Image (cartoon, rainbow, N blue to C red; front, top):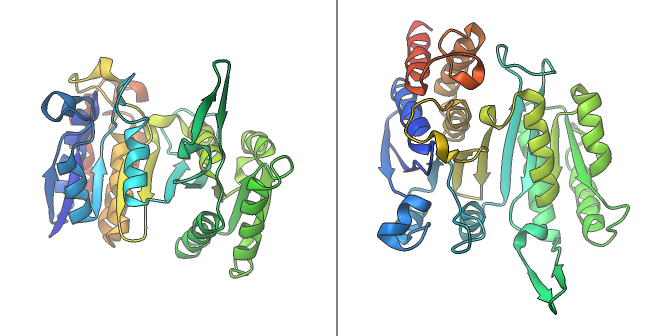
Length: 334
């Protein structure tokens, strides 16, 4: 029995979480959900968007599935997601982006993975005002942070039979910070001669991905570039609504969709559950439940390909719960 912390989240979060639970229940994988509220919905009861019981649950179970959370404007954390990553040292953000037939995109056969450093760089939030008319943000890149994320990327490539790792940087301009990241990436690459290695300046990387994405495979980048480039990759495959994500540390992981909470659609059961479902697929693989993960992904792909029982953003008229039921029906026939 797996005990997993479940954070339905804000806005459409509860809707897509319910759909995802329906699909996971049909896999037969024994899961005991430990459900907690976080985000805006937690503030009236706890006075904070990230209550201590949430942190205690994740710390105890060491694995969580999370819906989208809204960060309140003008108070609380800069970002709840950033706070969770810092609290549990979830240094690797893994964002796959692949095409599924039936999802409208300008590209075919995209299969990319962004491995983003999750704890330092400009996202560390070390910034301050300099007088009244200037602001300064400090970019922090460490050898330790660079080494562990680059090694994570190469280990991911080995375990998942990927062919190449591309380090993304701006070392031509930021010779100390990005220069350190690139230097460490090159050092780590020597330990994995079976994996092709190259590096790309981030602006050129963005252009290359638009022009010829088929040339790339696994990419590894500091925090800010990883955030930007991973959204670009999402744009290649149909948008944030079909892209999963994972935040992984040495012995703890949180799985989440990349998209936001879309509060205006809350409670209407029209939100597309694909991104959270694919995040759950990543979670199953993390747990070693490969067969169940493949079954969910294949059934989801089949439903999307047919296009009969999909949500409005995918060109259909189905509710999210109806799409989940269609996925379960496909799984039962496999």
